[in-house]
Image 1 (cartoon, rainbow, N blue to C red):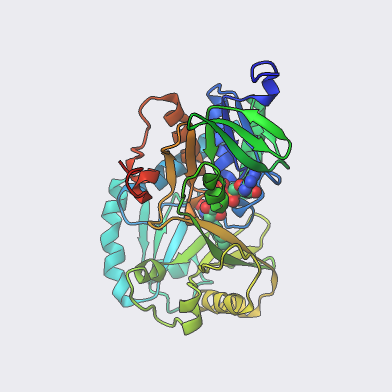
Image 2 (tube, protein in one colour):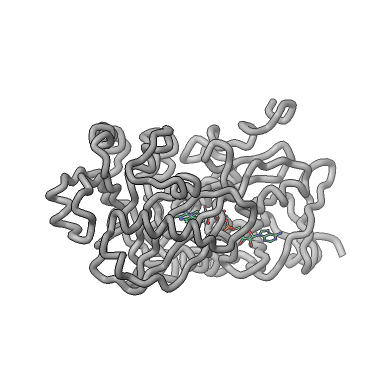
Amino acid sequence: MNDQQNKHDAAEVVVLGGGAVGTAVAYYLARAGRNVALVELGEFPWGSSKRCDGHAVTYDSPPGYFSRLCKAGLDLFPEVAADLDVDFDFEPEGVGLLIDDERDLETARASIEGKRAEGIEVQFWDRAELRRREPGVADDVLACLNFASDAKLNPMRLAFGLARRAGAYGARLMPRTRVTGIETRDGAVAAVLTDRGRIASPVVIDACGVWAPLIGQMVGLTIPIRPRQGQILVSEKLRGLASQSYAEYGYLAAKGGRKRNGVTADMEAYGVALVAEPTEAGTVLFGSSRRYVGLDTSSHPGVLRAMAQRARRFFPRLAEARIIRCYAGLRPATPDGKPIISPTPVPGFFVAAGHEGNGIGLSLITGKLVAELLGGGPTSVDLAPLRLERFLEPPHAA
Ligand SMILES: Cc1cc2nc3c(=O)[nH]c(=O)nc-3n(C[C@H](O)[C@H](O)[C@H](O)COP(=O)(O)OP(=O)(O)OC[C@H]3O[C@@H](n4cnc5c(N)ncnc54)[C@H](O)[C@@H]3O)c2cc1C
């Protein structure tokens, strides 16, 4: 039987990976009328998108290309939320950056205009304003830079809803299916091989997050993505602890190499910084940590202890709270911290992976950009800074 005879064994595009990114890509392609198959070895979602926080934010980058990309990503959520028949708890209620070091006050203030020029809503709350809004924050925190439109959402429901809607638009959903190989003909993609059979297709999108390099190897490509582990603590229900999400400003400043006040050697070694996200259920998710430990997703007592200490520094009431659960996930990290949304030297093989700590917030814009890329027209965001070539050695770079 040839490819045309059984339409179920052929697709115009096969998307590999059913996390937030892969489901968003499948959703936008199916919505554009493409004949698309979405292959995932587990359920929707199964990998990093099932083990993370749910922030879609603009706060964590200085003004510039990446900040604008995050803003473009955030802006897509309301429209997609209205289109899905799964409520993924999208709440653009704001994320505040807590400032506890005098040295950060001026830099924080100075960053406001640049972000506002990008259409991002930023407010500066002085100590009195912060105290009035959030009595649960430690008294010695000096100020807060509030990103009023940054959002939180439930990433599992997002990916599930995107897959479901993609299916309604005609995508063929293939959960519990492992990609085992990619067949090429004359150097170009010809088919995806799975443990449930072969799907003939001239186009493959590798959206496998930290596993994207393994898929790349199937066509001889080196995709420089490393798993960067992050741990999360979940508290008991703590209504009233915080009215919205918070992170610490000092961590952004510390990326420049400066030591933060009150940070222990363990916190430094484990890349610990406060992130607090109150959930719809009333529990609060506390992070974060950053470590390169391969594909290990086990919880580490030393990291959890350091994270709890850091969270207590900003929210003293936590000293009396109980932790009910903890888990770890893997950020797909590239060498420059930006994702890869790109064609490759292998005709028909595209990459949409490597979103590090922003894969939920950037999921929709990635899906939209891939659909535009395959449509052949101009993309709504310049993709040059996200091309795989930036990491490739010549002759591929040429
Ligand atoms: C602690 C923590 C907190 C985070 N918080 C946030 C946050 O608040 N906001 C944010 O934007 N991001 C956050 N992130 C980052 C976010 O989790 C990732 O960027 C995002 O989940 C990546 O999505 P993805 O779809 O690329 O990868 P994944 O969700 O990992 O999806 C890839 C899929 O590929 C599948 N796969 C792999 N190999 C195969 C194969 N051979 N065949 C078939 N399928 C295969 C896997 O099963 C997996 O489901 C956080 C990460 C961590 C660890």
